[in-house]
Length: 152
Image (cartoon, rainbow, N blue to C red; front, side, top):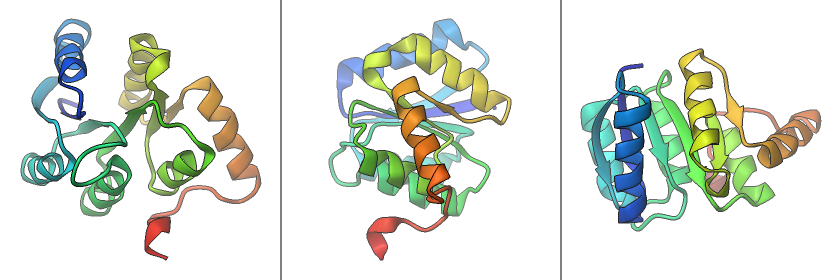
């Protein structure tokens, strides 16, 4: 992984994440950042970053739709969902969309750091409270699927 793109509607968080990458992951180049999903998806389709950090609640196109679209277009892209919206249904949609990780924003940058290290090793990472839900879903056979459940 060499490049990252950030899609987050909160400007202060975008700036924080840019600084975070510059100081904690200087080997990863931040290609850009967007405050809305429409612009974010366009930029990712054009720039093809190796890693995308995406929030869920975004103007124009939500993060779960972005996840599904990018994974279809670029199957090897790494996508980490970084959101405070962690309902079982949201986690289910992210897992079905082949998210490489899901970090609860309240977990902070320490969890995000662990997630980035995991995806650099081709592993998945889920915040502890989300991980329990993922395990439960997989035990029930919900597992990873490539089609978005909202198009059924």
